[in-house]
Image (cartoon, helix red, strand yellow):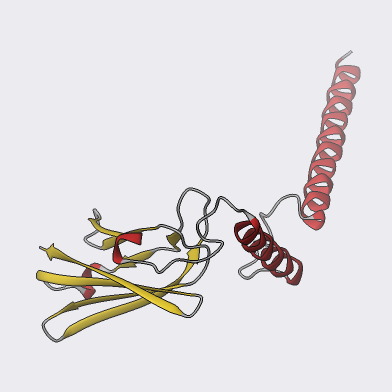
Amino acid sequence: MRIKSLKRSTARKKLILIITAIVLVGLISTFVILEMTGITHFINNPVSKTVDQNKEADTNSSDKQKLIESDPNNSTATPAEHTPSDISLSASHEADGSVAILTRLKNYSDGTCDLTIESNNNAHTQTAPVIYSPAFSTCAGFSVPANTLANGTWQITLSVTSKGKVNTNTISVEIQ
């Protein structure tokens, strides 16, 4: 009797081991297939865009521009002169001591944002593209590291270049 129960126990363990191995192979195969088809991104998280993604981004940008230019109710179809009030600029002190620069651009569909932060003889500059949105556009984002800015009053200037024209707005921020 004891020999039969040992054989059954060993057979059960082998069966459980085989079923577990089959399930694991199935899960790994499914994961690899999903990764190869691009559905997941756990293994190959691309650092830069693929050629197809770049073409799609260019097409989307072109389509947005055509939509803006073809909309008769859109004031950017025939661009008016931008004014400093078309650029809203603010600064936010972050918990790590850095300063995040927040931008809101009215009537901009494309362009480049040039940020300059100055105090005394110290200056920090960054550049970012304009990101279009139907409600309002914005600069891709600016964050100035804490060790870049000394305490004091800093002049933050944002220049936006679009369609060959430059518009600028400046604010003062106290860094402590």
